[in-house]
Amino acid sequence: MDRLSHDGNLLRAPAAEDRIALDPAFGTRFMLFVDTEEEFDWNAPFSRTAHGVTALDGLARGQAFFAAAGVRPVYVTDYPVVDSDAAADMMGRWLADATADIGAHLHPWVNPPHVEEVTAANSYVGFLPETVERAKLEFLCQRIAERFGRRPIAYRAGRYGVGPNSARLLEVAGFRLDSSVRSRFDYSAQHGPDFRGLPQNPYWTGPNRTLVELPLSTAFVGLLRSGGERLYRATQGMGPMAGAMARARMLSRVPLTPEGVSSREAIQAIDALIAEGVRVLNFSFHSPTLEPGHAPYVRNEGDRTAFYRWWDAVLNHLARRNILPATLDQLLNAVPARRRACQAA
Image (cartoon, helix red, strand yellow):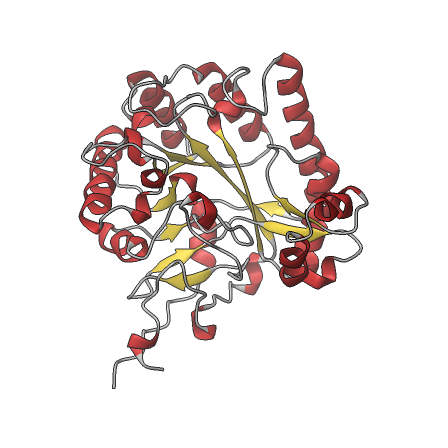
């Protein structure tokens, strides 16, 4: 293979030889990434200033719940949160206690340097000019290092907004893992990336293949799920028929998240992904969901109770399927030595 035939771009499907065969002893495991971010009005235009970092009691309660369940979350954390003394102090204790890991999460509209216009299109950092993406990423990495004594090695772009330069910039910045690819989703109509056709299992990315991509997990469920992504894409052009097929449990797309997904659907998705041979079930949600009133999914205390009931049901099902939690270190240790990128002829 000519090294120039694939540049490791996160918007391209990996070459066959870039797919990662995890250590068999790792088995099938699950991980939790929390998009740890400021609170803002999800229905309002993006703003550099209209936000807060106040949902810390909810974040602490969530951490206690997951620690008790033996789950070590990866808090991919954006600039307003890491810049908050109270948040950084609390999360620093979790890091010191080895009950959580801290990664990076870049919302460009609130991440210095503030040089771009704040627009919906510019909310995807990977589609900003390369110099701007690089500067924002380095500013965030330095702030995390100042707060926690180490640079982050795990990354998720805000709004899953990686672009053609992102993998290369992440390699240069010293990241070892990215989890921005939301397989089976297409955000191109919203100025964002198109992840259709990308894998569910980890693979090497970046020009030097030193960066592991761990996609977020999404399953197709229903009687027609064997038709997979191609059939799902076709149904999306059928207008009301697509919704009718989902309601009839014929075919629907289910990401592994408690946000807008029932526990029944999530359990179906878990089983479907295991049947597909997915080795790492990658769960995620947004940190403001942990405190009522900050995200669409948890508006009141009843919603928060339902959020934890969702996790009780899902964790119990994972235990029944003998799917254990994995830490960031355990996953990276299960990745074999990277293949050497083929030299250009």
